[in-house]
Image (cartoon, rainbow, N blue to C red; front, top):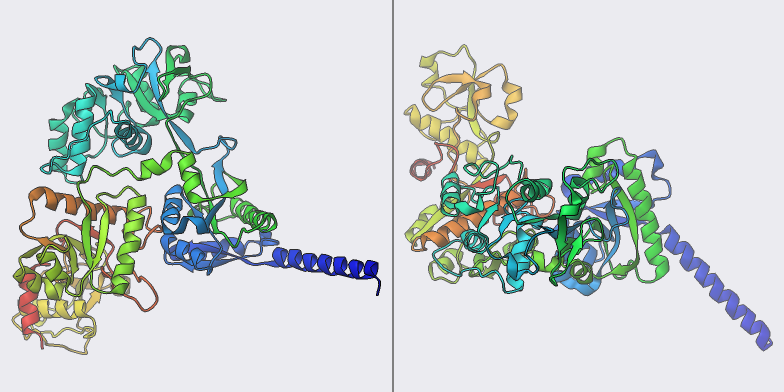
Length: 626
């Protein structure tokens, strides 16, 4: 065979292989990872008739943190994510993840960032540098918010202009409030400074100048005409402020610079203050000092290796996205970050998470330390608990929950806390007594929620005399039901273990009361009430898991730890808006139940909501049960 023929055959074979590769790439089924709670939503979107050509399937992860792990492990290909999730990916294994496309808004589809944080001053102001902000009257969107609080504190601290005290007698929150109070002469910084109303009141009184410019200084909370993105501008324009921290989109709306908007103020009287000390008219390009990146889709390096693979995935994502935009179930689509105001935007090249965040200056904002003096060490007694603790720590740090959690592993966690090798340990009810013996005390408790308590149901016709002697019917394998039965038995001076197979008096969960709507509840005081009164008429006495600390910790340490765990619950509790980011309560992995916290719990509270939940009652009942 001649060289020319061999060359032709070689070219033909190569072309054939390329065609096979292209066909293989085009036929590839991509795996969209979604949090378990939204798995059905994903399936519903892909069942829509317009799904033809998408070639995607849904893969359920426990939550977004787990989805990132599955993408890293090549068990999934892509996740709809927020910048905070991209930060977790960056810290997990930055080189293995790629941001491949963005989810933008229709109004700003050509903008590089979701929003840009800016500093606004009056044109006749003498403020020409960040240093000259000292002593100014400041207008903020609100306490704890990105543009009006986190970004200014982060940037001013990094510029070594704002000094935050490290006084151990102050909480991390108070250190920041103190710094702002000393830096600005007066402000409008509305919001809830503490989850405890009395602490909130004390802080606002102590740092009253932070509320002085508000519409209602004595309230210093929402609603207030000088709060929010537009309110901060209004505070500067119509109030007495010298500087406002807000974002570009609202500058355009407030001054009528956006289409179909009516001006509330005169743009000629205001300018942007830039970090380098220059100023710019608000009618032109802004000089922002931090930006929030767009939400988007994140994948792994193998999935998007090469332009063909990248574009193929992007094409599928765009079809999936368009399918979501036209889906009948708008709520299901929104759970996957798709809404009517959203626009899909492919990146020309895949971007590393670190580069994506740093380009916006947003990595520094996430890494804001919260002015905590040290990390809080949570003890895990085995590898599974350690794995969950580390996942929770990553999620919490990315979502501005401070102070940072450090996970430590010890075989005896209660002893580790006692010996100052750790700071906190989750303790189940049966071990409260052991923890107390080691001079540990509870700081927060799990709650199962108002509609998850054990109650006694009886027929309305049963007489009070019969109620005094009826043995209860209950599930002996359920410790909460067993304790509830023992509680009502002891109240009636019966044997705590008395049990019956009859249905005259039944111990059931309040979630199942629909099946007993024709009956009544029997309260601990033997009073009968409607089944709608379960929150105030129940037999729930089980001690939930509680977070224990050393009893000799200072009041500031106690308050800091309590705030940390209530913040965790607020972010990742069952009913929170970001519960899909990390599953704090519920099964951790298949076969791994009640890890650190109870699967049944829904939140953490500072005190048990139910008056029956009492260590003395629990201990007495447990001692008498066989």
